[in-house]
Length: 341
Ligand code: AHG
Image (cartoon, rainbow, N blue to C red; front, side, top):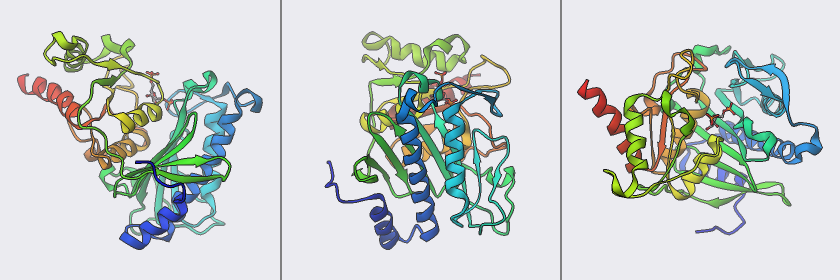
């Protein structure tokens, strides 16, 4: 049900802090700082061609991907916004090989922030939704200069996660471990306003999202699962499925949070050095946390994403997430295949 336009993100966080004590002043500040940075990114994205910010930056990231100018700018906006507040021990980003230390001139806090500053960047130049994804972890006790291994905690350890989608409206979706909540940017007021509390993803769906052009590179159980969806009413699933693929995970996941569906980026053998595409620490984990908090599920096709023990900051992971019953079904195809081997 749409809420009255009176609950700002600030008020929501203060009331959560009072009601549940699961957030403290530093975590509240962290979320507000990230939200403020996202507003700045939204302005830059919204300028489009007028801002001179479209196109490639002429550099590459640790994944070997060409960086767009807006990837680089969004990364700088998040780093600058989070440097001086005293709430972070460090941060890490898709766009940086190594974790970024908090400058010595500023006080340090107890949280680690990980982010994909601009997800879906192949969509920037064509004016399709892109977004920012973030994950918050505790810095291990006694660690003052966090290194990559200190960030490598399973997703179940996240204290908060969220994304902002820069679409026709700018929407921030947030979990602090007590439900998933949606805030819409009121552009006149310049503040995020709570518009959906405790989102629930429908358990069943007739819609899936996958990049079909990779089909020949998938493993057998993924091939079988998708073939059965495509067979529709005449196949073993006995119903027709629709397909959507935005190629911005934020936009695809936002659709699923709104009306259900299953989002899949499976393991594939397209490039042996990069099995699959999505990154565990700042894409799969925060999205899995948000989806689970909304009653959905998120697996690698075999295991719960939030229980994957990371071994590297930029590691990749297969992703199946969304409507609970459909993720169970997809996971069953992979587990049955393994069991029959
Ligand atoms: P990036 O972080 O480089 O912008 O990657 C986008 C991700 C994700 O948002 C999207 O679901 C997927 O890559 C799209 O992949 P394809 O190019 O295979 O469609």
